[in-house]
Image 1 (cartoon, rainbow, N blue to C red):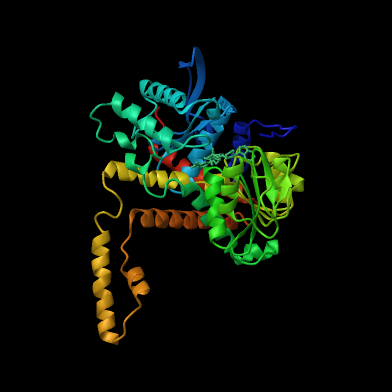
Image 2: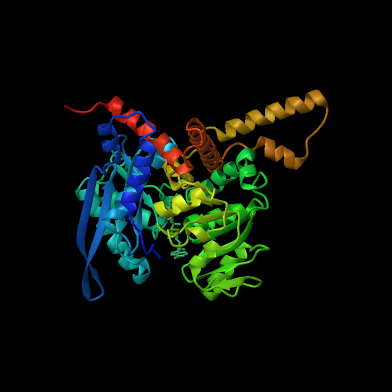
Length: 474
Ligand code: NAD
């Protein structure tokens, strides 16, 4: 991952700097602000795992940034770039993210410093289970304590190894499934979690594009249809975001992965590109597209919307001035350095911040946690009831008017909500509502600040009130 060559701030310092920029617009005394900013608990561990004939000493972390609400919540990342500063920064962002989308959790994050591609599934399972048992030993995981989730380099498979390890070390704990989210549906996961972050990115950007006044300032038409989009990273977040943009009429003009990028101003079919990459092992040589050798240069191509959805610091003091997008949606956590932020704000670019835009994952994780605690699938109690009620209303209307709706209309009207319908609806409502909270803060601050600073003020206000109401022990 390319880092800024003249980077002044570490990732965590960058988050603190953004916090400080916003804190001066809030009403809290300095002690409360210091407490909000601080990482409450940092657990750094090393443990041995036998890999083939050797023993490897694995370095890993779990950071709980804030306990103002419990449990703490945040993903687990597998990457060679994992370090304490990065995990602290990501944990802090989780606190602000949860506050912004009104998810009642404190922020946390975990990381294991490994390249997952280097290990077999069996070896990854050993590392993951050992990490989980270290968390159990130190009371750093549990439905009411700290609830991890997937992040860069992890997915449903790793989550099921963790829940299984936790449950076997806590026999009889009736709520054990709620110790982690992002699980496969067969292991207590919720439908819609896999695509939730990418879908949230789409809902958030759609809301930005639906604000006619803001689009006019950028010289763009209202609405998502026809907007030219570049996405970096075709993993969980990037792939699903690209898919929802594509399905809803946006034009995907550029895609970047670690091996290189492709660009076609007429548009790329995301499904076919993914098939092509699977078959050839590369994005390059996709029919009709131009190859971009240096993947990072894909971000600098012409487009309306740029979605960095890989890792942090990819847009920095070195390349920010060359970015042509008018809207940047932070799918990844921390893809812009503070230097990049300053350059882009001066250029009039709307930067939609990570702690709002990629909060779809934690929002749906919250739904999964609620499902696990209630031990019932969403929709199980009311789906049939809604369908029966819709049926009798429709029959009455048809009886009164003497007209009949078509079979397609009938099935649409009768349809009672399935779990995935409820999850999508809760996510959509959250992304729309939270965007307007941030926009109202922007308006209150008279447009003097950028959207990231406005989002921080919203988060600080909520966490600050929590600390005030909790009271501080003497
Ligand atoms: P992932 O591992 O599923 O996908 C990341 C993708 O980025 C991979 O396909 C990888 O090959 C690609 N990539 C790596 N280096 C690249 C480079 N230099 N250029 C282009 N592509 C590159 O990870 P993810 O879960 O999609 O997470 C991506 C980002 O989104 C991270 O910053 C993560 O913290 C953030 N995020 C993830 C979630 C979630 O629910 N998974 C939620 C919120 C935020």
